Structure formats: structure tokens, C-alpha cells
Length: 198
Image (cartoon, rainbow, N blue to C red):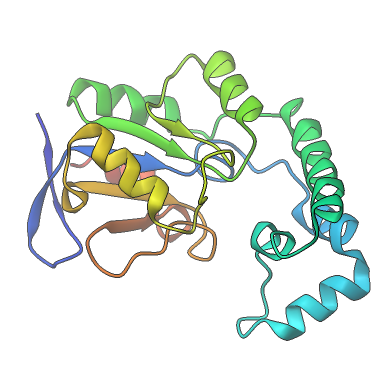
């Protein structure tokens, strides 16, 4: 079974799959990203990176991809340290369990894309007893906001992108595509209550 929804083309489409972001969407945000950015870039480096960005924001993973391998390794070690600290405080977002049960009852597939490490995804699955298949972490390259992970999930499922919805909390960090996918933002509405109306 699938549900009707308004797809990216403006018409009604059958919703056959939902792909979720993890931090801030399925889980309560616990990582201090501002402190992590300062630890990786330093205050002056962060200010310079923001000044160089047209939007004033910094995509830290793409930023450090331009560095030499030794500097990249040190940066990833710092990021991983912050992420591992967050694992101790990992909490499910209120309503997420009920939404997943509802999606299962409607046979709507669930996938996950995160820029977090695989260990965080594994702990999420283990701690909260729910599975998102596929679940792509930062180790899948290119990582979001590139659309490749989302398109990979659609291909794995054998479902056209027009019948899949991506749910996240950040238009800057979530998947950027031109048209074929419907994008939902958790912060725009009480997403879980809205999804139950499908």
C-alpha cells in the first residue's frame, strides 16, 4: 500500500518511501556543532570560511575535503570525537517511533541518510529497535547534500524518485535536487502529526 501526496511536480503521486535525516529529525540534536566547527577550523578559520561563503554558512565536510590528507585526518578525528560524545546522549525524537509504526502498517519503506558516522547509525538502530534500510552514513560518498545517496536508495528500492519523500531539518544540509523529489522539513510543521494524516 502507498499513500497519496503532492510530489515535486505539483500533481498527486503515490508515496512509496520516506528517507530521513538522523540528527535533528529522528533524534534530538545533541552535538554542539558550533563548538565542533571552532575546534576544527579555529575562530579565525571559521570566520574566514563564513566570509568566503555566499550564504555565510560553512559545509565543514566539504571544506575539509580541500585540505591535505594529514589535516583532513586530524579534522575527522575531531569531528568523530564530538560525534562519539553525542552517542552517550542519543535520544529518539518524540513521535518518531509512532510514525515508523504507521509507515510499516502502510508498507511505506524507510531509509536514512546522515552525515554522521556509521557507529552512530548502528547505535541508533540498536538502541531504538527500528531499522531504516538502506541507512547511509558519511562513509557513503558523495555524502549529502549531494543527491547521490538519495538516488542510490531510490534505485535500491526500485522506486522512482517522484514517489519518495526526503525528510530533514535543514535545507542547507539535506539533499539538494532540482525537481524530481519532494522535500519536507521537520521545522516547518509538526511533521509526524502531518504524516499520520496521509
